Length: 625
Image (tube, rainbow, N blue to C red):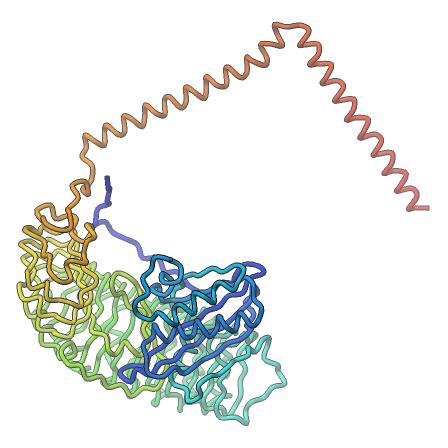
């Protein structure tokens, strides 16, 4: 019997900070990753070995050549296992963010038909360690290694080894004579130094703490690039940062920054990239930030920002291509003029806020948009039919001129993934967990390059469009928890890339298709909550909630079992108590023997205490003399 909770109950999002964790005492931890850059298929791998204190032992990046990210990650794992073997490491924890490789290494029955030689090498190398643990980790906890893998794919050298810098940055060290300072992926501690004349300053993935110096705008006025991401910096962003007139890229993500974002950005006329995500920033979105003339990328996700969205975007730059305000507390409606003024927007990520109103049909003016995520808000009304004219979901041409590390968390296939430059190749539309009504527009089926469509958790009615099968590139389709009716269109069998499907909790009826991809969808939960569906896979008859009569019967059984439990406890106490005390009351010789034994034990303990006290007193007196 399966009991499921109501799919329409409200859920609360919990934001959890994910970081790298130390291995057990006496163990070493190996993290590896692979990377593949866009259409060039240029691949690389990276990795690092650290001890139980989190101390860096050795790191590396390697250029693989033309391959895919999975093969690149296996190469990285193989190379690092050889290194760990040569370092005579006995107890090793291996962490990877690719679950497929973890399954291949931990499950003996896993069929290795794709890349047998290198996978077999990894399996063989693992047998050389006395103890080994293979774990999956979130990409957020493996970000440092992911960056090294990307460096491997981009570098000209075949192999680079990195020894970690540890400790505080000495006050006597002055690198002002250098123009570019890159000290990423170390264990540098202490406060942030100020080195004049430096134009590119990157200290990401270290252990820096304390506030950003107030005089950074005056002391480092020539900065063009500033990257302090993945540290422990706290306090507010100083307003003197407005003095960095030449700054083009600012990355302060994944720190502990707090307070309001000041409204003094008007002097930074060259700034085109801002990422302040994953902090504790509050207040509204500064208009002086949004109005920067060359601003192209603005990422403020996972903070505590609040206020009206329209006010913050009132003077939005016409050059903007990416807006990411995910997981904040922004309210209001999406202004209609966003689609009329800002034609360059390609990514609009407003997931997890408190926005309401209708989805404006003017969004069809964002012809280049290819990631539109409005999930977990309070939008109402129907889905605009004009969205079917968005060219970004039909055109495969990708133009990206930024040479800056970027990443964004996106929910795909029911899980959260972290994407880097590959985000520009994704075609995602997510309107889940809102109050949208009406039918699914037939026009959406013309978005031929769409990869992921999620309309779950709304109030949609009507039928699934008959020609939905024309979405041949679709990999994820989630229409669950709506009021859809009718049959499952046979054309869905032609969606051969479809790997994640959820049609549960609707009013669908008729047979379940059994051709092509539907042969792999054998999980009954995909179709549950549709009692009139039939066909493969076998529909379980007990997936609904138990009836009131069954519930009452179970409650009655539970109360009866509790009664027997209490009776047995009381009976056991009575029997045990009178078995001991009753025998002493009845038998006089037993009673005398028991009390004599107790007296002897008492006298013995008193003698031991007296002897030890006398010995202790003599010892104290001897020490005094």
